[in-house]
Amino acid sequence: MTPGDPRRQLLLTLLQAALAAVDGRACTRAALSARREELRGAWLIAVGKAAASMTLGAHDALDGLIARTLILTKDGHALEAQALAGAEIHESGHPVPDERSLRSGARLLEWVEAAPADTPLLFLISGGASSLVEVLAAGVSFEDLRRLNEQAHAAGISIEELNARRCEISLVKGGRLTARLRGRRALALFVSDVPGDDPAVIGSGLLGPDPRGCDAVERVLLASIGGAMHAVQTRAQGLTVELAAGRIAQDAERLAVRLAHELHFSRVPLKVWGGESVVRLPPSPGRGGRNQHLALATARLIAGDERLMMLAVGTDGTDGPTDDAGALVDGDTCARVMLAGLEVEDCLRRADSATALAAAGDLVHTGPTGTNVGDLVIGLKLSEAEARSWLQTEGLAR
Image 1: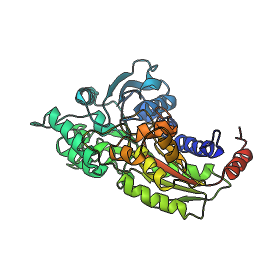
Image 2: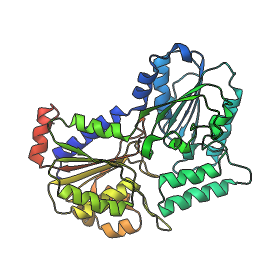
Image 3: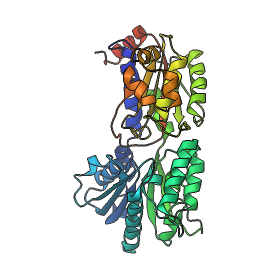
């Protein structure tokens, strides 16, 4: 894209609005602001990529009423909570669990068992919990766990199927942690990254219903991909926006064909999709994530079209095992990749999309966002002049 292309600023402005609408801190603070007395002296347990931001929101709302705090999250996602006095923080692996995930699982059970019977329990659960915390069933080894996750990611199976397999070998997932509460009351708040936003699926059902039916947990959904999508529509006032009716949930390269087709024939300037694609990985994959793969696969299909652009990002700020949220591509992306001496098809075949997109200058980096509601894809069909006019109307022109 040309330097200073206003369409890039427009798309990133919409992304910021989407992330703000599902921010873990803000959503948790709003949900707890009227529940101070019932949560006085609570033990707080936060698990997932948004654990730190949700914890801060809880402390904002309850202001000194929380007795103890445990945060279990992904590497690099706890920085904003480091200043919380007395908070116990553990980081572990994602998207593939590591041995720290087992230590975090053990610590989680210790906390649940140690909590006094008359102490309110507040659970804050967000996407990523499945990998970050685990307690394995008898006879299941860490190598079995690692192999399950690696094979699942290589095969590109759906998150629903992977979570079902995780529950089969876990002592805390599939509602089993809820069972450990032995019927005591608890409040669980959720930031969802799964289809249907079902607590029985979020975090592989870490705080889902007790399979034995003994369940006194109150469950509240705080944020999901739908909220992020509607925030894009609200922020893009003056532009017609079309929100996809269903979630994206298929192979990234096949999905790219569909989205590029819809964008090419669109009669509106903005189209928004949400969900998660999948990528089948070769034996020795390169660098990248599903959003980068989707973006690069789309770039080859819109090559040469000066009006089309696409932004594909993970709302948590990390796309697969990378530090980039995703990518923003246009009709000249493939040309820039070729000028760098790389081949788009080769990079896709080797699952090395990040290398190509870095060469094209198209990677998007946000850092940890404080939320995790899945992936957001925004397609734009607009000229530079039209985008510049919108930015001027919004007072954002540079």
